[in-house]
Length: 376
Image (cartoon, rainbow, N blue to C red; front, side, top):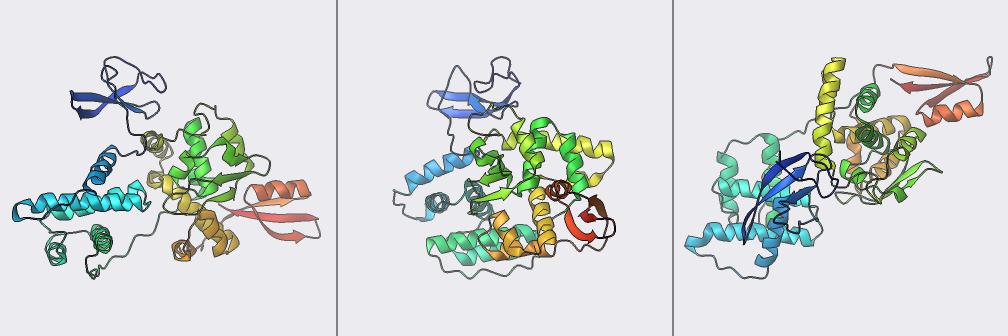
């Protein structure tokens, strides 16, 4: 922890050392605020931090790539490694100009860098295939590396037919709604609200971090996702009154944003700690397997089970391709028909049950009641 100083963003004194930034005047100590996730340099040697990316190294890569994209390089025997590195940077800059997310760029350049470290000549597909054939890879890592190099070759006009990888992706873990609710209830106010929003909208964590107060409509209980990630469509999602009430109860401390848009990494650390504590307290190891994206998988699966409408689920998730949505049609075989059953005698009671996620079963004419159910 830093000996002195406070975060210029929130005033917290919970500062941790976060490496050095090298400048023309020498190294500058950087700090990370554990209160709000803000990164800044030593106040005695301030500098303007790049706000465009949550990944500091990627920002530097893209800046260097921008310079290289305007400079012609000549490949000689003694400059092979330097040329390859320049090619990776040039490739990263091309992806940036084409609008790909920085997370995607980072993953692809990381895989290409790994191939280069293993001795592959990225400009020679034969050399790359030799590395794939001789090195030990897990099926998932090999699949991602092949995909990254295939895109690299296509982008730079290199002729290459991707090799086949026998890889069957694991099915996502789908918890019960009760386990999600236990996790939400056990977390702090802001983290719990964040998780409840994930559960009700099926949005990605980054999309929820970028929500603004103007995106929430408490008159018709909807939340609009206007900063969709990974090339998805923007959309408006119906949510429960509970979610709207929890969001409205949060203090407006981040201006136009509901949550701190830079909070994803810090919140993840806090979330993991709280998740571990709750799993130990309830003696339920399944809770340890829940992460931010689990809420999206759960929401999609349950919405398809409830509606049997794949196009509705596709719209809710913001997918552009139906193939990405179809995975949720067979994630769970609902063999154990355990339900919560509720009865309604008035229209108001029926409205409340529907808002709580219950589905209509039938009318009991003898007792003049409507029977609803919701899976446990």
